[in-house]
Length: 415
Image 1 (tube, rainbow, N blue to C red):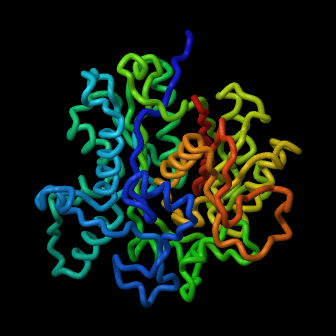
Image 2: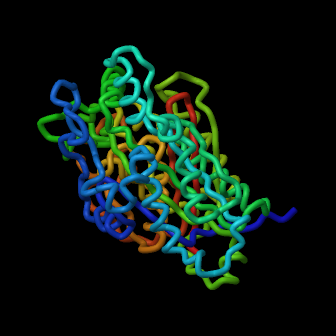
């Protein structure tokens, strides 16, 4: 059976540094940090008091008030980004067969704010179990693709993948495989997360996972810097319209990149720490390139998982060197989490948008906030520190890794 080709025909973003794709891309290439003091709850008693929040977002600008109250912020952010991607793709104007249009989503946590509020209200009440009737539909991680399908009447495959910070990348890979196999013509795929909440920040603080650089939030996310002290929580959503190549050509769609491969692996090592030699990261990139059927020398750019944690950045760098050898020194590497923070389950989605942008514009966004070299990292690797780089980008990869040892990698190519 000959596998079908898959292309990107629409993009949408709602991020800490831009409320649509163009704003997001402009901020990425200009090295803008999205970190600032937390406004979504009172964080003054927390070890970490800042995050990368979506700015100037009012749900009632996008939804009827009654409808907005039925959705967690996680769903709201996802639906708004999906609307941009769908409109951008033009699929609604092309008599697409909606029974062959799916929505495959990724979210690591889902409606944690709703869960937090409902349980807190019960605990501080008089013991009477009075819960909002929308508690469960607002909370569950799979509700966002349900809302999107109902808004547009898309009746194809519809579900959410949950693999911690690899969730939306796994969603992309599932969409890729379904279209390749002819199970759908178009899939709206992406991820959303809204975990700037007391429970989330407090929980990650308890793990010592978050930066506590409260005196200088904008430079707190500093991947590959010697003085990095943890990741910065982010929120938002990224979405792509993935489409079978001949279907896209037949309707005259604009094609932004070809999605040529995806890889998955497990560290099988530790609940939260990566394999120290980056074995899982090595395997997932190797698997992705084999699936894409391209050689090591063809890769121009890698958007690393690069969370700004002491162990993770080193392990991933080792994996790149082990896989690519001397060729690694010709690859433009970066971590856009230096600007957006870490969007957990939505990280893979917005970072895939970044590599698609790099292919579209032949520009690699920078890794900002680099001040001090880490002697544990090879100085010959080009991490694109502090300034965007203009170079030809024909093939680009994006890595995402999650707690539990989940690894996913996607590969895109210029078309």
